[in-house]
Amino acid sequence: MVTIDKDGRVQRIQGQAHPWKPSIPKAPHGQLALAYVAQTWKVHDKPEVISTAIHAISMTEIQAMRQAISELYDFVAEERLKNDANSRDPAAKKGLFVDPFFDDDMRDNGLEQTAAIVDQCLQLPIAVTVVDTGPVETSHPPSKEINFGFKLLVE
Image 1 (cartoon, rainbow, N blue to C red):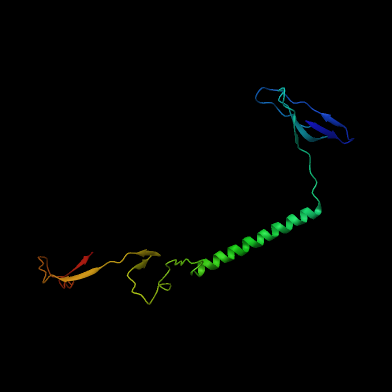
Image 2 (image 1 turned 30 degrees about the horizontal axis):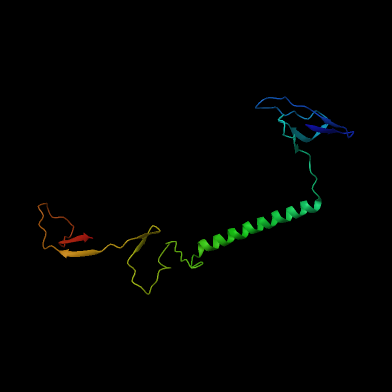
């Protein structure tokens, strides 16, 4: 590790060598770490220097970052408003028609509607045929129900 103190003296502090898990030293009190030096001790490898120095950012760059963040917040808020408006007013967007099936108001009244919307789910049509089966004989005592002798056949 390479450090610098308050008087400007640069020092190199050695870590603990190990074949597969070397330890990196900590900067002593009053010293500022500038870089780590990684050395493999192989014949053709040069030591690798990794900078850890603190980089100063100008106030102009900080102000530009603040402006970009503010613009991002505005963009996110605008997209949320668009999504909210689209969910309230679904229609054809980019060639696609979307119907949330809240009710029948988006259906084409000019065509016969054979499907049903139940609990915001489009259901296939049910064909119902009523067949007269004649009088129905009952062996139980008469009740207040009226029996017309019809059966419901669902196809």
